[in-house]
View 1 (cartoon, rainbow, N blue to C red):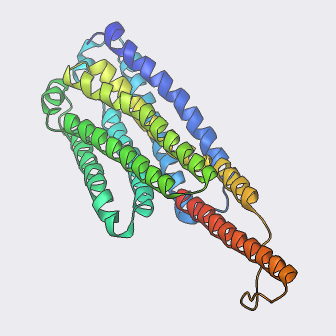
View 2: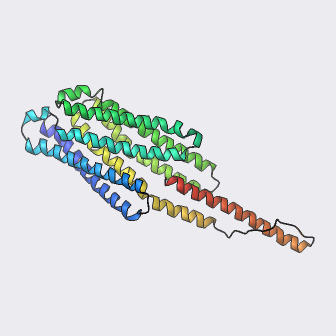
View 3: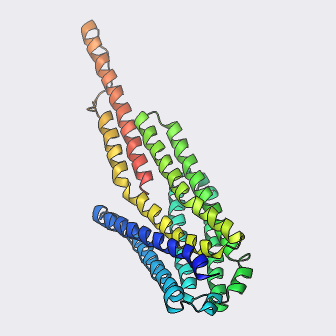
Length: 317
């Protein structure tokens, strides 16, 4: 791998990754400014993702500096893998694992009680498998730092890691879309259906953002195109971190839709202390029937507003 032909692609991947890290910083700032009422667990997860992403950028910059500046022109250095690349694989795996488990947690709460573990268990197993393969990849490149050995070992470490990431991402997205569609089909409120359709679009867009990169990484890794594989490895954790933060930061927009849904359905509820009794007078009977219809509409409204609140709570889990 020559400097112009190989590390040109790696440098481009590093620059794009640094740009995405800037977006990660912005989204983290927006989260802590607008969602201070979140529970401490969610805030801690956001902090961990940001710290891991920051470490990933630091290791990436060290690796590029090592090959392109410190050892510029030293062709023998290209035969060895610097320690910062192995370290970047570790934090890369942590970011992907945290984000995928976060979405699996959402799927768990959206699923029916009897089917929760049946739906989420395969996703969790795949996520843990990719974490194990990624740790094995980092260990192999750290213990034996020759490029030749790492290239031979990738069929047992790196390639299974990318494959399990791919499967977990597809299962996460498909499960989330199916569950949201199922809830939308059971709802009788048009605005609730539109809100659920919006969530489905968000889920598909997140998948379309990360899935092509993972597929390209798997393809290039299989073809032994090392430089572009490294470049895409730089991008993967940034895309996962930003998709995670975007899912948290869009809740305010979803809340506004939920509030408009509730206000559109809002009418004054009428409560009766006594059951409805029709009197003998015709005029009084008509008035009582009108009161009954109004009460029935209020009950329907209360049920619809309850559905909106339940949906909002499930979305924000």
